[in-house]
Image 1 (tube, one colour):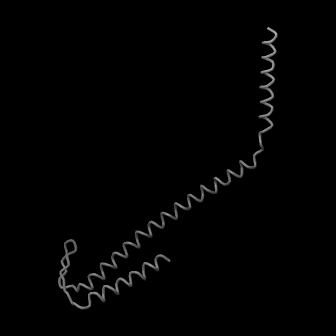
Image 2 (image 1 turned 60 degrees about the horizontal axis):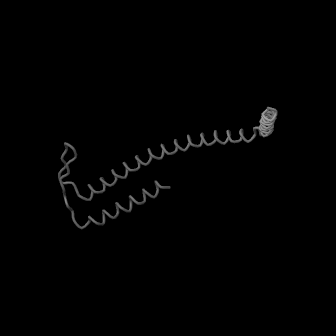
Length: 120
């Protein structure tokens, strides 16, 4: 969907450039690295520059899209693993009985210590 919006925006911009530069047939000299291009229409140069920019932007956004999808897959895998761990923890028996027994043993030990102190 975003590619379609970008494409439509690019076409609108190209049409705007064509309309904007139609009144003058300006010929320019264009330098690209070591090459020199003479007597090139400014309109043609603007359109080619815009198309080149759009292609570069689409390539960069495509790479970012792929990175985000891979990151989302790894996060989804971690999420599923954590959900399985939560389910496993919920299925574990509650260890309340052992805690109550430990508390009773501690209370009995305290009572025994108090009794021995009273006897002395």
